Length: 391
Image (tube, rainbow, N blue to C red; front, side, top):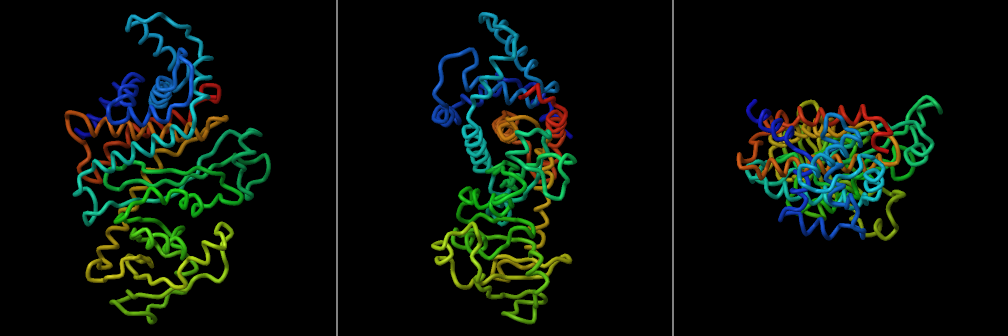
C-alpha cells in the first residue's frame, strides 16, 4: 500500500516539465539529441512537444486543449511571453514527431531500466524476458481500414479495424524492451513475424518465456544460435504428437527429442536462410501442471522440470502488463499514440527508479500491484478520448 501511495503521489505530480527534465537529463540527453529530426525553432520544438504528449496521455482530461492550456500556464508562471491557447500549433508539432524517434527512445529507456534492475530480481540470476501479443481496436474509418483491416471473420460494416502488437518485457523490472505493431490481417501480420523483428533486443544469457504461439522450429534454432534459452508451452500440432516413450528419457514425462527441419520453407524465410538453418535440433519436452512444455534447457539436473514450471508460471505477468497498454484509438496517430504510451510508462518507471526514496519494486507482487492503479487510468483515458482530441 505504501508503494502504491508513493507511485500515485509521484504520478499526480508529474507534468510536461517533469518529462522534459527526464528527457534532457544526463542519462537521456545524448540519445534524444541524436534522434531529434531537423527542425526550426518554433513555439513547440520536438522535445517540448514530446514532453507535452507524454503528459497528455497521463492527464485525467487527455485532450490537446488541456495540454496546451497547461503549457500556457507554465509559461506565464515562468515569466515567458504568453502564447495563444489554440491547439493548432501543438497538433501540427505532434504530427511532425517521427514515430521512429519515439519507438527508439522507448526501447532505450526500457534497456536502461532493465540493466539497472538488481540481479536478485531476476530468476536464476539471469534476465528473464516475457513475450506476448495483444490487439487494439480503432475507429472504423477508411484510413484505418486501409492500414489495419478488420479480421475476415467480421462482416464488412459490422467490425472495427484492429492492429496487432507484440512486446518484449523484462520480468524483473516490468520495463518494456521492444514492441512491434502491425495489421491483424494479411501477410506478416502474425505474432511470429512481429517477434522476429524484435529478436535483436535479446542478449546472450537471456531467458525467453512465451505461450504456445511461439516455439516453432526456426525460432528455437534462432534462440540457440543467439545463446538465449527459451521456455514455452508446446504448440498444438506438436503437443498432440508428443510421445514420452521416444527420445532420451530424463524422468517421468520428461525427455530429449531431436526435431527435423520442416521440409517446406516458410514464406517469410529466404532460400539462403532456409539452407543455413540446421537440419536437426535437440530440444526438451516435459509435462508439468497439466501442460506440455518445450525448452532449450537440456540438462535435467541444472534445470529440473518443477523449477521450469514455476518459472513459466511467471509468464502470467505479461498478461497484466499488456492489459495496461491495450487501448482503443482513432485517427492517423494510432501507432504513434501506442508507442508514446509505451515510452511514457518507461520514463515514469525510470523516474521512480531514480527517486531518492529508492526503487519501489522489490517483488513481482509489489511491482504489479504498485503500477496497476496509475496505468489503468491511462488505459481509461485512451479508451474514452475523442478522435478530435488527439487527431
